[in-house]
Image (cartoon, rainbow, N blue to C red):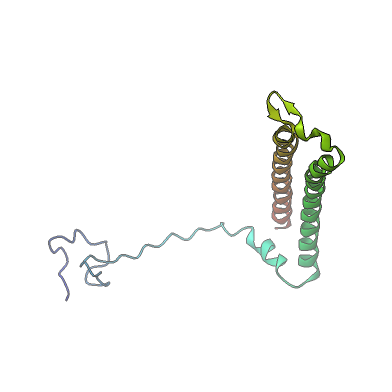
Length: 146
């Protein structure tokens, strides 16, 4: 079941598609949309492709990035673990603090709300900032390689 170009309800056809192409179930014409080729957009890719080769240069580059990422992760993980381990340790060492209240709020909630969560949030922001800087330096190294 083929319709003629310009048939009622179909609207105008795209240039260069008269009589070609397939129709949808509702009778509308399908169009192919293609993005223009961008020249110069792949400038940074040769250096990135070198990373995945099994040569010494690519392995060294990736190993350096992974070591730096491990260092950043450990620099956040160790203080976070210390902060989280400190709360139960204090509860065991000072059981008499169970009944203490600060402005009508149990001391345990004050310690959780003011002594544990804010430092963890700060560590999270610090981690994100350091990893973004690390990745930016890595990208700059790749671009300098070109």
